[in-house]
Length: 635
Image 1 (cartoon, rainbow, N blue to C red):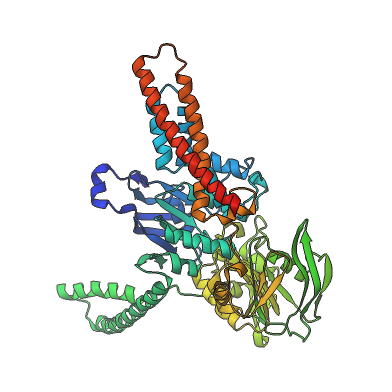
Image 2: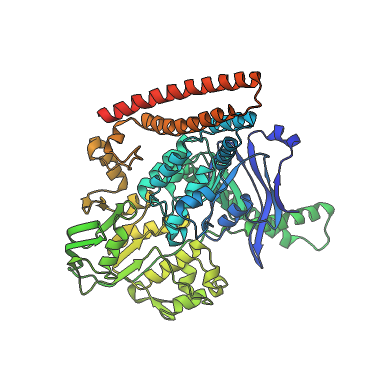
């Protein structure tokens, strides 16, 4: 039966580095066959990007590998003892829990070590259990777990630990789920679009974390820079077949093109051979020899190969842009704050024809608010925004398409008319337009809610572009789009004659299409930087450290002097505080044992020896703590 199995010990020796095998797995929904007979493996230290078109079943494959879903055929075989963590697109978290409670309620191995240690402290009579628990705390580095998970949450901009999960945005839930997955310290980490809902600073931190750790990773992501800098292997699902590339994204692009060129050359030869064999077939009399029958069988195989077609249709983007006058968009002394946080103050800017600007900054720095003020969805606190009379906005928002239950794909487009105008006075039917966006006639009658995330985004992009905007605003347009569609969108935007305003965490996308940046600094200012994202990072790196935008550090105390200790000293300081508290509890537990009137002299001597060693250890750690505290206070 298809399923999720563990390799028996007898097979482990032959697969020592093999963490997981997918063996002939298949999945279908009704008449729709997503994939079949797919086989590949994941080995220790692999950092794999899984690449395929939208709708090919990438999320289904991740669910099968992680054991969340059973394949219709085939099986997933995992090495015994492998610890696996999975980051889902839609994380399942307890809505009534706080952020901190969600961490502590998760199935984390380190929490079990801590719980075992706490129980051993309560049961002071079992010294062997206590010693084993103490050693486990040391080996798992569990003493500073509290500081570690708080630092990780801070990195992911989840500082309010008491905030309820129910009140979190979709992006915050995804970040909390990512934190829980990382804290599991898995051998194999499976990730579905890990960079979605992360700002650029978080992505770069995660990138460095993955490069520096020994995690084995299997992920679906469209972030090409992330793939390039993290992955050492790419597995592609293309036309129902699996192809493996032992290299990063740049290597994948080069080798895939070589493969396609070879396939095209072989197809050309097969077609020539088919023509030759077809002529032979037409000349042959009805009576066949054994030899000719064998050639006839070969002919049918050649015919099948010669008529094979790659489904290499790509999205065809075309629109009839409305005429744009000289007056476009003007910001005059625009300010906006939420509660005590000032997002931007007295911002002045006049947009010009052909302008292509990217908006970057940390989550919560005001990028989406800026777009909502521009589109007049919300009002500024002061100042004004003036739109020219000829401006026609196209706004692609993060929220995506509004899904009406029971609505079919074709009905979404027909709401804009049965015929859609294109360039040079041409028009196209709603059905033909959808075909250009890779929705075949059968798919057009699917319910919108049944589409994959990427297909929904592609449909939404279609609805924005067919309105023929001359100012195009894209807020995170790359989320959930496959790499093929992203390349087409980039090429379309390079030729787009109107004004383009983009918010995106996809650095590759930003580098390719924007000319300058609005950098939201988080202190109420917006910097106009002449260049793309890579230019900006190079500029930032060249500046003195005092001028750089850095990730807030986790402080030892509320005093700013804590930052004057080195990182390793801060970490040691935190660990010492935790270990001293633990040793004091251990000391108290040992001293309590001396109250037992039935203790033998031998037991008293043993307890005395243990207490002496513990006090020595406690004195040493207290002395080191005072050294660090003195350095901390003196700076």
